Length: 369
Image 1: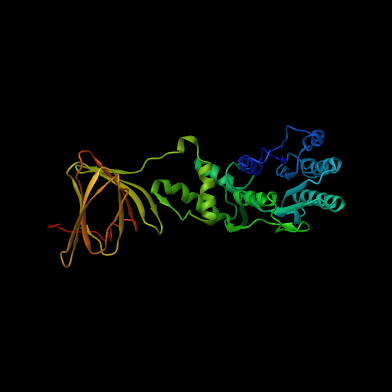
Image 2 (image 1 turned 120 degrees about the vertical axis):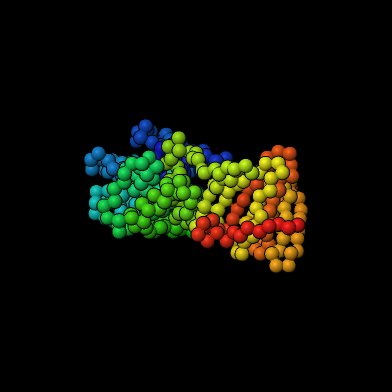
């Protein structure tokens, strides 16, 4: 059973559980009432207790959704006389004396007493701000609010940019929960648990990162989004894009030879682009001292020529799109590429550095072969 199955964390967890053939999901949401719990629990072996109130209309909502629901759930499990394990999604605010923190701490106490009395397995996770896809702006986290607003050109509020927050990514929470469902015995049931990794960032830094994601589409930049916090934040930002923003245009430079299109520029891993060449057209005719490139012919047939700029040694060979062969440019070797096919040729290109007009490291060379 997943309580709060239609909430942010619940949706992400159920999406994963739904892919496990051996698992049947019983959902408990606001459409259900407490009296249905005994019936719903009849064939349940494991409960993910995620339901709760974050921002109720009044403080009574904290009591009803965080404490009374937890009491009803524990009582229903006890009445079932079955050894049903529980994971409870609590909050790091349980140590605070605000209404939300007090209600989460009281719910923890309900589960602890129930666990001790009935000798069932219960894991209590004190989670910081969870972020990720399907979160609600102005409700779940500041990450959701910033992603939603910036993706729609809505101003964001930054009261104190130096304020630090601790974040945990929803996929990491789900991964930890699934490990326990699968019998991972690495955690003690009498402790409060956390999910790792956790990330600490200031509000100002968070806003700057998300603003950079937005600007990156215009500038073609991708800012180190392959791992860690940036990977998770970037995925979250993209999940908030309006449907009409799923695609965007990039610059295209055309002349008599064909076209050149830049796609991605990175901070440390160069850029990706492609170019076309009409039949018989030769492109290139230059060399680099340090810059390197990789060419992949994705449509057509190409004739590559290389010439060492000091000793004049030459190399020539043909490459077809049917071969899926990557061709490297070598520092100190002039090179060009000619379309020897009957149709327009398309070539994918990766360069290890972004083109700098002030220091291009590209020098024209007349290929006397």
